[in-house]
Amino acid sequence: ILGKALEKINKEFEDLEIKKENLAAKHGDTTVDERDLIKINVGGKVITARRGTLTRQKGTMLEAIFSGRWDKEIQRDGFGNVFLDVNPECFQIVVNYLSELKHMPEEISHQLHIDRELQPMLNHVINYFGIEHTSFPIEMQSAIVTNHQHKRMLYNWLAEEGVRGSLRLLYSASRDGWQASNFHSKC
Image (cartoon, rainbow, N blue to C red; front, side, top):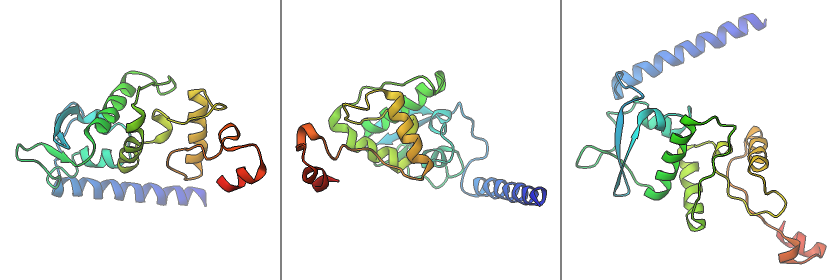
């Protein structure tokens, strides 16, 4: 039974790959290379990145946009650059991070210094493009969970349950008071 199920899954996967190739031929460019340099107008700022950097995390919207499959359909500015209407500082942080991942194993903690005011916008950009939170610099205020690897572990556990997003401290006894009613008013 398992053998037949595996054969069916493999056949469906092959069919899906053929559909992807046909879509690329119709709507994109089938001769793309991960070494291609792509100029992107991000909210008025031109950012240049290698295609391989932008497509590093498979299955994300960012990978789909820059895979080449949709090159004929992507919105472009007057100079032919891909146009993205997102915060340029946040997008540059994402590109820098993905580029850094290329050169270091994911097990190594990647510490990017992010302006606290940018964090909500960065979270939006990360969610919008489907970037894996578990492998992205994690901003979480906590006096208990201070180790970056522990924060990453929390995100991994949440991702396993299909929960995406960012963590936010709802209750702190030192800030909100020690009584149970204070806790229950926040959580």
